[in-house]
Amino acid sequence: MNKETNIHKTANFAVLSISFEKADAETRGKFSFFDDNIKRFVNEIHDKNLGDAFVVSTCNRTEIYTTTPNYLLIAELYCKTIGVSLTEFMQYVNIQQHEGALNHLFRVAGGLESQIIGDFEIIGQIKNAYHRFRKERRNANPFLERAINSAIQISKRIKNETGISSGAASVSYAAVHYILKNQKQISDKNILLLGVGEIGQNTVENLVKHVYKPKVKIANRSADKAEKIAEKYKIPYIEFDSLGEELKQTDILIVATGAAHPIINQSHFPNGKETLVIDLSIPNNVEKNVTENSHVQLVDVDELSQNITETLMQRQKEIPKAEVIIKEMTKDFMEWEKKRKLAPNIHHFKDVLKNIERNEMHNIHKKHKYVDVHDMDLSEKMIQKITNRFAKYIIDNPWKAEEISKLMHEIFVEQPNNEYNEKR
Image (tube, rainbow, N blue to C red; front, side):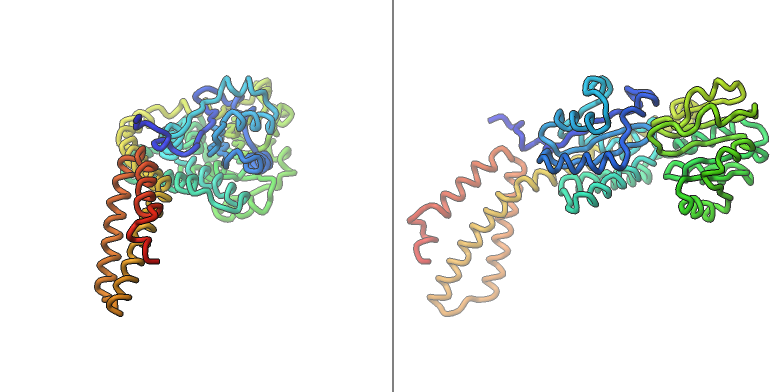
């Protein structure tokens, strides 16, 4: 019998990924997912009995992790939800299944698939995506739950046991690094950060950390959120409605918003003031035509990622260590998955033994009017020991699990003249 049967495969699990590897920033923007779309999408997948799914959408990638048996139906639904053609989607998507999908998730969580290797901002976004999924579905998916927990542990171990995140090279730091490298007298520059989501907050933190007394202000559509961040970092914030007026005094504009369409355009820079604009948003939230104003320089995520090569060369050397951790954790996961699939066989086997025990204890009690507690403890230990041996055997030889379980059932349950069934 072929040992490479479906029992070895990770349960229906696939990832549909569009990332910087095949798609530039502008293209990735077409496939971005926003919260309202995600909510409708994952609920429709569940309602149509296509499995479960959660979506990770960041500046570098949009990925759908799903327990579906038919990923093409998921792809069609995704394209319908965001209004793109399936043909265009298939040009850029990378699809992996089973262990390949699991390995991809673990590599993403470990920072190995980031545009900037070792950038661990992604693990927070994975956790948020799964928490959002659980909130919508209101119930856990054991497979996804275990996969996410394993991904989190991998991220922690790689951070602690390798140097893959040594040196500062996140997307948010890359923006600050670019400013430090290309701007003079930075402490005198008026910096405005637009958007205080996760990347925006990390950018503020890096500005405060690496620039001496930066003249930075923040703006956000939600004033409450801006106020909290401003208070945390002891910096001023402006009302979003006064953005146009503030830009007249701005030397460096950093855009880290999450809008579906550009919110900054050529009309925002009418007065000829030299302005550096850094767009950290995917899809781009700054229109490309801003550079038609000769005094405006525009830098996006892809360009930033090319400016930290020295750090990345050092991180490349740490990849083999990280891959060892991923291999080890993947092995643990696959062992758990085998046990989960075989649990019904193991429980049934133990139930058969417990039934034999009850019959024997009944006969002993009937004959001697007494059953020694020590004998009962010994019997329980023997049952557990035999069950463990059975479990180990079918886990090591999963292709035999059904055959052996059926045989055990026939011997101990279905035999009409079985001595254990005679005196009930």
